[in-house]
Structure formats: structure tokens, C-alpha cells
Length: 248
Length: 273
Image 1 (tube, rainbow over the protein chains, first blue to last red):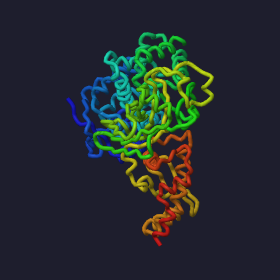
Image 2 (tube, rainbow over the protein chains, first blue to last red):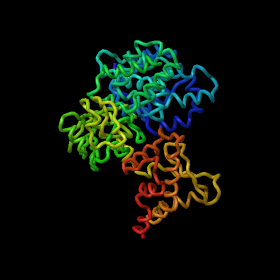
Image 3 (cartoon, each protein chain N blue to C red):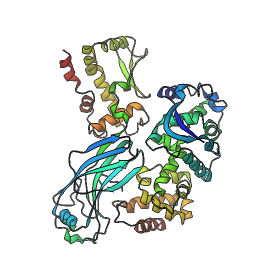
Image 4 (cartoon, each protein chain N blue to C red):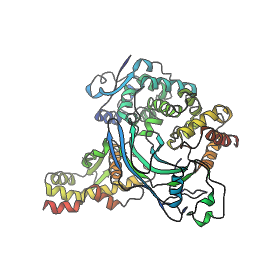
């Protein structure tokens, strides 16, 4: 069942941000139900949301859960655009209303100390910049995982969004070196070759030092090569990535 | 491919940033017209090049021409095919947001012997392997644009006058920590600034006496490598306005840029006389 995706006003966002400590009990044990029906909390976007799907979010951590949660958020917010997904007012509404329970269980469970909790709220409940929405926001990071993976998967019908997510969310340091680096993952054909090659080389995905060396080798060997043009075939790009992987 | 201005290539590349060829130019004409609509972005460009080797490769059908469009915020990063001369590029959907760049690029679509390039620099004349399809042979200079509402926001909308009792008499200061730049003024300064804002002559005086140094101070803050204000509205508005004026943050002259952003405030003194 879909409805319109909502957002909070700029004033509400600023107010919430300055009152994190004042509201800390709401974040840790309560909710914002008494505000969430106010007009300033209910501005409608032209995008849709399937709130029911979000009930399936799993608050435990780990690579597999991150993959399944990313796919759930992607299906729930299926028509959101990357331009709109930079908007902290959308993410703030979600983490304070529809996904408060998940956001609390996922990011605040490790502490009941108010000062530590306030810092975690600031990091995971607002998505104040593009990088914070992509890397830190409780729901934003899941949407961005899938959006980036969908751009990569779009160029090869044999590769699914889930296939891409399984590779680039294999470990935190792999995400750091890939999804958090627009310079690499925005190059769809190169990223796709990385998926095809790394799927067959699980040892690299399980080895932090080895993976770092692989990325360094790609940077070193790939400088000056334009993989994006039609004159370069997918086989040539796969071959380049495979050689980098096998040299580690 | 990430293209940096200090990038070195093991083969000749026609580019203003290096000496791969002895002469010639490659890139877009000065006028680039960007039209934004709800459906996406339409760009009118003019691809130009002058170099006998590049001309010959093009006439022999061994040259691919494209526009590299890159937007880090949306992960859009594609090389879109183009033609020589004026042409229109359409990017459908909201795929560009915030800062994005365009660059002309040319690559080989078939193998080329290095010795066939008659205008390359002497350093390559000692020989080398044949150039393979996909090899970059010409690069244009990067042009920067901004998509989003921020560029239309009035500059005054990023400022907020705030009373700060802790400041010494007659002093004012700025804080960058909120969505708006806080112009902090002590209990003597605050009413002076508030009063000056009430008249046209007063506003002109404020622009020169207060806002000009304040904007300079903000631009210095924006230049700091470690300062991350990217999530704040004031930063996005000012970044958009700098890009619209073709000013790069990294190399900007803060006094000159501040005067541009405030639309030549000294001139306004005369206009208000």
C-alpha cells in the first residue's frame, strides 16, 4: 500500500537538530507522535512510499542484513530520485516517524548514556549533507546503497542490484572504498567489471589488506584509461580488473 | 576515468594542460547554454578542434567524440557521444543536482601508429607501442555548473543578525555553525546594524563596512581544506553563486569574489547618494 512520501519543514528540521538533548528520552524510549500530525511534519513530495515494507527492516548488523535492508528501502521508495535523496528533510521525517523504531534499535541500542546517544542521533537521524545521507543516516544509507548498485547493475542484465550489493557491502572497508567513492562507483562499466571479477574471487572480499592492495593496483594501472567509451569492450575491462585482482 | 589537470599520459594527448602535441586546440566553444526544466537538462554546446592529426583521424573515422558529464552528488558519470560543431545534449530526469561538470573528450576507435601523429611533441618521437582503440587522444578543459534552487536564493537569505552580549563594545563577528551565517553583534553594535538596514544609504554603508569583510571571511572559511560545511544551506547557496560566476573555490581571490557576490558594493554607494 503506497502513500505520498512526506518531509518536515526547514524550521522543524532546525528545531529538532538544536533540541536533540532535550528530546533524548523520546529518541531512546519514546516517540514524536504528538508532533507527527502537525502540518510542519507532513509536507508531501511527489514521490511514493510503501510504509508497510519498512516494517520488515532488521535492526541487527552484518553484511547480509545490510543487503536485505537496502533492498527493502529501495522497493519502498521506488521512485525517489537521487536529486531528492540529498534532502535531509525527507530523511529526518522517516527516522523520526515511520522508521523511528528501526533507527533506535539499529543505532542507539549500544548506549543509554545521554551524551553518547545525542551524538549518535546527530549522526544517524538527520542526513544533513549528501555524504551524511549516503553514509550515516539510518534509512538514507540503505537507499543510497541500492541506488548506486542499481546504476551499476543497469548495464548488465545478468547482474542484479542484489549481486552488486553483496559485493560492495561485503565488509565495512569494502563499502568505504567503493560506495563512498563516487569517483569509482559512478563509473558503471568499471564497477560492473569489479562485481563480475570479485564474485569469483571471494578471498579478496574477505581480506582487508588484499582488497586495499587491489584497489591501489586498479588506481595505479587504470590511470589514463577511458573505460566508458564504446571502443572498449566489457571483456577488456573485465580482463583489466581480473589482472589487477590476480596480481595481489 | 577521473581526469586531473596534473595527469600525465604515456602517449600524446591534445590538451591545454600538457604539451603532448606541438600545437592545436580541443574543447567546447566559450558559450555553453544550460536550460533546466522539470524533465531534465538541455545543454547547447559547440565542439571545436584544430589540429591536423585530430582532423585526419576524424575524417578517417578513427576518432570518437564525447562529452564527459559527471555529478558526484548523484553518481551520474557518463561519456555521451557528440559531433563536431554545434549540438544539443539532453539529460532526461533529475540526474544532475548540485555541482556537476562537463568535459570534451576524444578517443581512438581504431589502432594508430605513434609515428603517424605528425604534430606530437618531440619527446614521443623516440617511438613507443601503437595506440589502441579507446586511448584518449584529446581532452577539453573542465566546465562547472550547478543545478538546484540554491543558485536563485537571495544572498541576504543566508544571513541572520544575532545579538551576542559577550562581544566587546562596537565589535561584531560571524558564526558558521548553523544553516544561516550568524552575524553576531554586541548590544551596542546590534541596534546600529539594525538601524542602518532600514535606509537605502544605510544598507549601502553596511554592504561596504560590514558585509564585504564578512563575505571575505566566509570565503576564507570555505577555502579551508578541513572545513566541512557541505550540509549547511549557506554553503550550498554561496557555492552555487560562485559556480554561476565561474569562480573556483580553491583558487579564489576572496576580496574580488566578495565584491562580485555583493554586486560591486562600492558602486552602490554612488547610486544611493
